[in-house]
Length: 286
Image 1: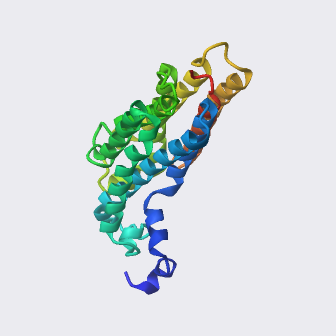
Image 2 (image 1 turned 180 degrees about the vertical axis):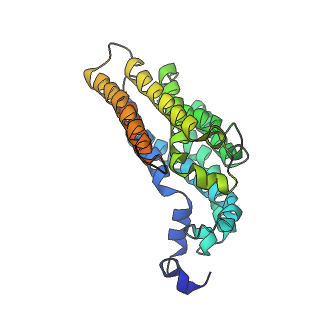
């Protein structure tokens, strides 16, 4: 593609192109949520910084490796918005950045103790297995369940006494991750299938993916409301009730419109945000 057809990319710096290749929006969202959770459970100072740095490095690694592995498919589907396919940055540079970020994760986590280092390293390994080879298989949801379950476990294990993470917190993270997988692809199922993506959401179709996303996210909501010790809080019960109301509204709106299920997708995102807020404020974990 000549430069006249991509003026917005012609002046892009190599650093900006590399950042765009990392899928910065979801990576930043995950890093922020886990950092806030870490602050909520008692991390301060260098420990809080180490948690944030290790999670950020893991998100960069997953994003860069994903873009590098998808480069050929992106070219074939005409994805000129991607830095590699637009020529803004070489594929090799993105791949090397992904490897370096992955190697940095255990090094950044090691001062937090061996249990925490193992937890985030396994979470990273699972996420990379999604990039290849599980993304195009019926097991595409498994890395999301494992990695998102282990991230809050990493936060708790990183505390000075290395306490065991509560089962409810790990389960809520896993359910939230699984729901996020189905919700993330809802608007683009047809486009993805046309370019050869055959993950579990594409195999069960739009209706099945809508149901899976709603069920997993509602499960995460219930777990976060009822899981912490003591009676459920009124804000937690209110958040749970909101989640129960929002999803049927989104489903009904989606049924009334043609095309992509954008209304339901937005409702699912709202419930996911409710779950993230509940996760962050769940400070009673030790």
